[in-house]
Length: 260
Image 1 (cartoon, one colour):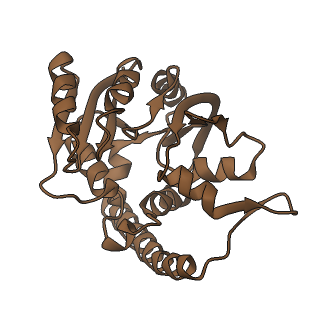
Image 2 (spheres, helix red, strand yellow; image 1 turned 180 degrees about the vertical axis):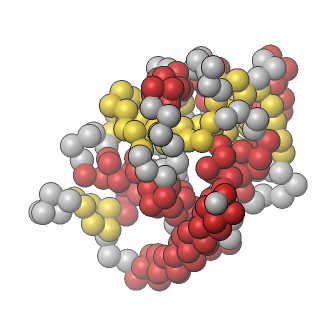
């Protein structure tokens, strides 16, 4: 049976971590849940220890210093022992049995490398937001590593998420860079129509910032609200993304050459 490790980076999400872990425990084929605490200050690690005590599939690793979600995810994958990995943010949750559905797809099609599910976006005050007809919906899904199952070996070959300081600014960017690399090198990617992941929006979250910085336009697409300071930051991150993508391509090329 195919096994899946769920990787949960956590930074100050003590109030939502249990919900995330419970949703992962309800998935079939999940044999391991790795929580990586990014040196939280709100009791997240204590919450995680309680969850570890309640189920042997759950384990905790605490980083020595606050390092960002990319480093936390990379550490989680390094500790995982399953053949496949699934990323889950500590303030979100899995829906249905996305892990089990993904496992069946992988077993039916051995050439598959990545499976991505449909995502729903929920605001505790506004209710469901960012519907499928909003052009930002697809962009939000494809630019996030969450709601995705992939082979652990492929993740390791590409070198994981970028960890540079450039990706720790207000714009983030490590998810966007990672997903660009995945889509460039790891086709085919299967898209599952069923909702398998729920993003919870909150003030200051990546989704909240994304919606605040974008607007729909007359062409039926979306655009970023003009902002000089944001554009300077975006240009800086774009340079880091290109450097990361070049490194991934080089690593994968070297891996292929060695395999031959």
